[in-house]
Image (tube, rainbow, N blue to C red; front, side, top):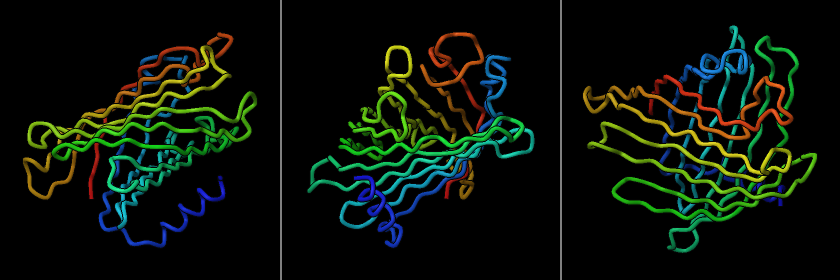
Length: 244
């Protein structure tokens, strides 16, 4: 299955998208300030490139790359790549996805790679006047996981335009099973709120805003708990975005 997923992703790279939307984001993360020494290793800056491409025959791709910056170094990189194919004319698509990345400590040492994660399933879509909400029900395969490789994930993705496009509200929410954490579930959501300056100055495709990372069983705290990730974390950012 994994080889088939990779083949589909590579094949799409040779196609020419009918619509391609890309944006660049820079986030200053306040997580390390909110929690002090408990999150002292959390990078201060994250640079993100995000792309959505629409192809013929109901094919679409999405990817983002996060680059984490600290002490004048790139100390981490993480990517998600997904492919969707609509099923006939229904608001449903087949969805495949890859997650992976690299990380070091803030000094750029003690590096490691995240275990690859592959996902496949169905995505249910709702479009209304340019607004979008998607619910994904996915099988999750976690390579080299010490407890279980097969799991599940439920993902919600949304993008809403408010006040005639002056404000954008978008983001995602993930819930997946991981038997290495307390309660067996991980929660992660990153809602974003943007003020779009192109509504005031034509051609200025700059947006300013904020993201709030809300998670449980996800952020590795520097405490003495049996499972380091078994805590709620709220990490806001101050951000700017340029859209192409």
